[in-house]
Length: 103
Image 1 (spheres, rainbow, N blue to C red):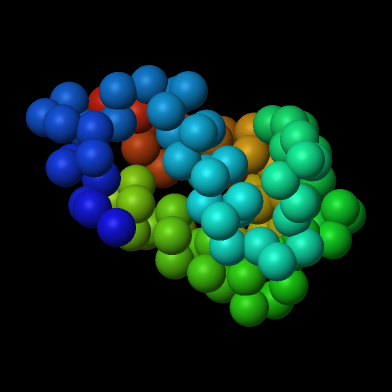
Image 2 (image 1 turned 90 degrees about the vertical axis):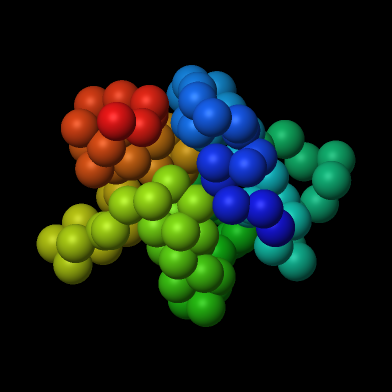
């Protein structure tokens, strides 16, 4: 897997849609319980749908930290911040100061 800057070019994280796509693809590629014919919406609770084990939750946290160059503080490691693509987007935006463009 290429570093984020190489995948997206010099502009790094260009927009929210690209971030949504990366998170969705990570979930699809790493979940045995995910079937290709299933559609994952931005609001689907991945824990309630059974896509997430405790091991996958840690892999997801590591993916977000590495891919989006953020450090998730302990007080943000809550189910609410990881339950859906939208909640992960909101958390990343908070950690990046409100936007996805690298400074």
